Image (cartoon, rainbow, N blue to C red; front, side, top):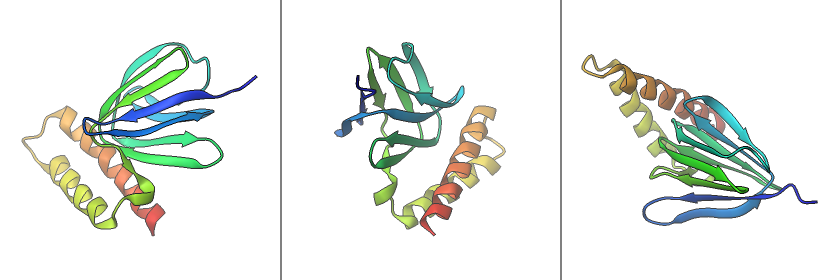
Length: 132
């Protein structure tokens, strides 16, 4: 019996990924969430972080926001900010990091905006270290 389920990442412009996988990890506001075949039905929101899709080859995507639905062994991720880490430009990472740091230090920012900025900074620093 197969342990695979379908994962699809869609942006407003295109379908970014559609494939079978045996495990996915998503960054939700409830925490890092692992999804396996036959997971309970789920709807949640993404926070800034890295989506990991595991099969023979691990694929990672940086996201800033989005929604997730898991039902009937189909994981649907809707986001406008999915960037494949394998193709993410270091200059873009640095620009996003500077922007997030400004948001975090802005005294006019709401608590939610600072919370989101802190996760962006943590994730972008992790990506910078991975890229060398």
